[in-house]
Length: 371
Image 1 (cartoon, one colour):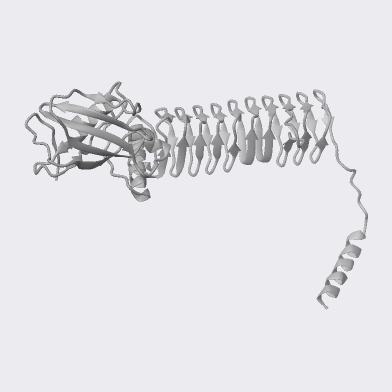
Image 2 (cartoon, rainbow, N blue to C red):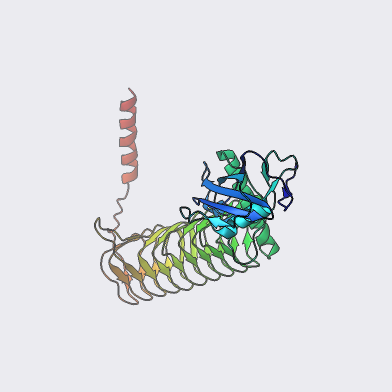
């Protein structure tokens, strides 16, 4: 049965009634709302199940039990000073828009479309949810996520499957951005026009600039991905990762507190921590910056146009100069000058004919172990 709005002629119930309503998280309040000849005392208390931040923002940040009962007529709207979290504006909308007496006068119900929210500007139209357990909380959160996705699509964002993305309320999506299924965008993440975030990515407080691509299954927290950059698949950008224009960070690459200049590349299996990588530098597979000595972090600097061969360990603090080359397999413990070649590895030994003797010895040892 649908509730009808409070009117001057509405007859109040003779006993207290209760309605479950969604209001602000952790917020409590009490007010007396006068509408015509009917006075409603409203008390807001936190509900039993917490909501995730997305639903908290979208559904006015909470679950609560609103106890509504009739009071003496003629009293103005008041707020109990013990409960500073709820505003008169919130409660005015609760009593005037979201709640109505049933025709039989027996109980109060929440009306779909109630728009509790900040007092400024247009209010969000959201449904009233009764949330008393984890499953109902999930349904409320899903409704909030669906509403955010729908608003984004209507504003020009391409979301391939709106039911399979999670977008926090503070996330900014520019028209022309593309989101694939199973994408989670948290905090103050921003995705600009023509940028694409593909399936399985989790981005928190990360900016994805125009024309950048984040391949599947990347985790980015506190990162900046420059225009036209390419990340992943399966890359990890941690706090302070700053990728310039056209940078490539490939599969199984982790970047932390590191700045990569325009066009720099680290295509596979690399750890870059506390480093500065110059424009156009190439970091080979298996390279790591050894930034921690057990007590403090140290920085690595790689100059513009430098080439770091595969399986290199750069022991910080260290500087690799502009256009320098570091041979594969090197352990670099000292600075390398601009344009220099550095190779630090044990000399190769080739012992002719020894392979057959080694195989014979190992085979005999294996036979002995089976007897």
